[in-house]
Amino acid sequence: MRKLILTVAAAVLVAGAAPAAQASGGSVELLKTDFSWDGLFGRYDRAALKRGYQVFHEVCSNCHGLRLVAYRNLAYVGLNEDQIKEVAAEREVQDGPNDEGQMFMRAGRAADKFISPFANDNAARAANNGALPPDLSLINKARPNGPHYVYSLLQGYEETAPEGHALPEGMYYNKYFPGHNIGMVPPIADDSVTYADGTKATQQQIAHDVVTFLNWAAEPELDDRKSMGLKTLIFLLVLTGLMYALKRQIWKDVH
Image (cartoon, rainbow, N blue to C red; front, side, top):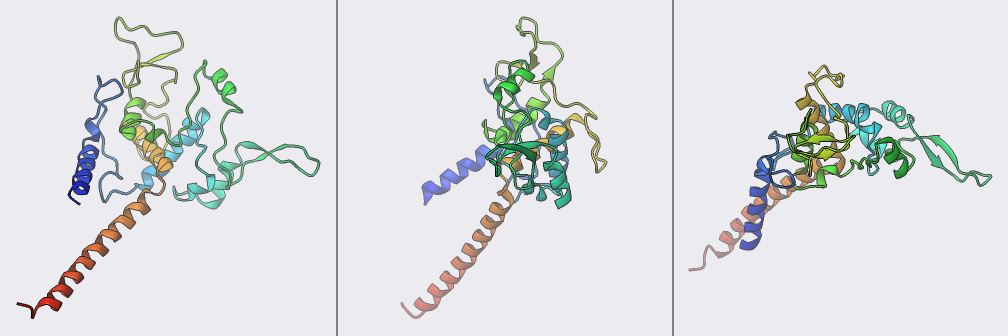
């Protein structure tokens, strides 16, 4: 039991130290920010989730896929049935065979997983100067301290590389990316989107919101898991109290 308690305590300390963690290579400290889902009682901010989806849809989905998430799951983000159908139908997917044994293309459906913006990896590389845009379904889990890393990466571009740093043609300098040479064009800036809810679209706000959405994509069950964990803790506390009271009652006449 003591070993378990120490393990949990260590995990809590590691999680609490997240904002101060280092980028890959250990030389640059990640940007600090607070996410609504941090901590024992943290939950996803539904407004931030919906804004984050808007950023993904308008900016990220032009190059990146989300192959582990189904369109119908966007109901949790705040889209209604008609909006989900409209989003899914924006792209086509191969289906079949039909009655004649032929494969065919059809519009996406709510039950489909997010359809990739490219037909295959080679097409993706050809459209991105040889770089393969990663699928973003689990990007927040791809690195230690992933949410803070992605948040920092999105804001880590600099117009010029430091003196002495070799920057290949077609690459951009990003102080948080391993090696600092990244093939992705700077994706966000102030006012690069116009939020439907009127929120001011600063670069920091956009990065925060899209990271929130990407964390939901990687951990859609987080809210339910934390709710169940809290209910379990309350149940165990009540049960412990009842067992203690029962023990006192049984042994009260024993000297």
